[in-house]
Amino acid sequence: MPRWVCAHPGNVRALEQLGLSIPSYATLYTVIQVLYILVSVGIALLIVFKKPGQWVPLGMSAFLVGLSAYEGADYPALAAAYPVLYTPTQFLIGLGMGLLGMYALVTFPNGRFGSRWVLGFYLVNCLVVVLSAFLTTPVFALINTVFTMLSFPLLVGILIYRSRRLLTAREQAATKWIIASLSLFILFLLLFFSLIPAFAPADAPALLIINIAG
Image 1: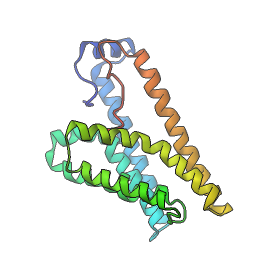
Image 2: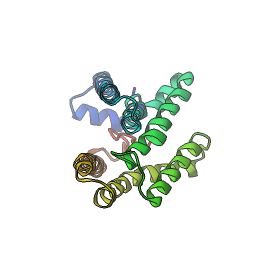
Image 3: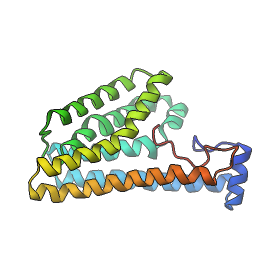
């Protein structure tokens, strides 16, 4: 059962209003998660095979694999059920969405930072990723969550800056697709977290809300 769907009366009533039972919803959730993981890992493998031996494509692939481990596997619930999986899952997330993935995003597509403040942002992100593996206090978890959410608009800003100041015309053409994708993702998050609470019952605020920040 997903960690954000429990046997809460409000959750059960909301599912009934949607015409879903708890078993059918759990099955639907599992199918979507499996498809999500397969698509993410499949695209990652395709990138590696198409661009072998290059750090930026490797980092983008690692980012997709880390993303699939982060939400696709519902890792807190998975780690609680199978503690042996906690370390490898955290490693995938830290390496994919942190060290390699962030490097690929902030240096896309040529692999060069090109600016000290861009390098500084990357180093701060690496520090937060490393500390998050050892510090589990609520205060640091909140800081990590806020930093993670802010990193998406910051990435868009970095890519726009690099596109206008540091990249060639050909590199700009490739970067605009990353900018568009991240912008759409941010818009989706804003709409998602704005609209879902309006439809969720008052006594079940967590219903159908994906914990993207972990």
